[in-house]
Image 1 (cartoon, helix red, strand yellow):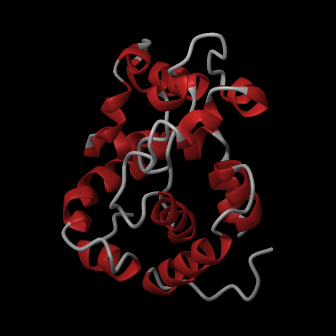
Image 2 (image 1 turned 180 degrees about the vertical axis):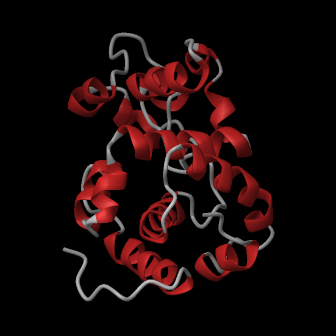
Image 3 (image 1 turned 60 degrees about the vertical axis):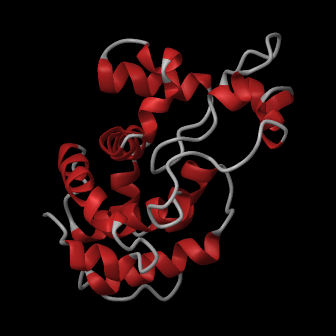
Length: 191
């Protein structure tokens, strides 16, 4: 089920012309990863909307100093970043519509999308419209989020994407708007 540009603009009022730019890539990527029901699309688009600032960002905002949190300690190890050699934090910052972050996620994404390790050499590919959408749909699919969307388990979806509940209020607002635009009944509680 494809969504229209008008629907996408209703869900993402701040997207403006970005809605038309991203629409074909989003529809193709969602189709490839079975994000093909209104229920799945509403949850996916809500998460994409929050993580990308309603399609305005395909690269994590922040300077090298703020990205140091990806360089050392438990988070760096969790992301598979090389803690002995500086640079993985900024190099493998969040990119794409769901902000693929860290060396391990870039490698897994690269193998899934290209069948090779090219994203480790050229992580900026995820800033291109097509790959930004494809990486988001791949990440969604690889984490089994279609099944959670089928059960309206938005809290678990958020945790799998974000690692916590950062931005939950905005995510829920986007989910409710997407549900309304895609003609789904409202959900009273996101749990």
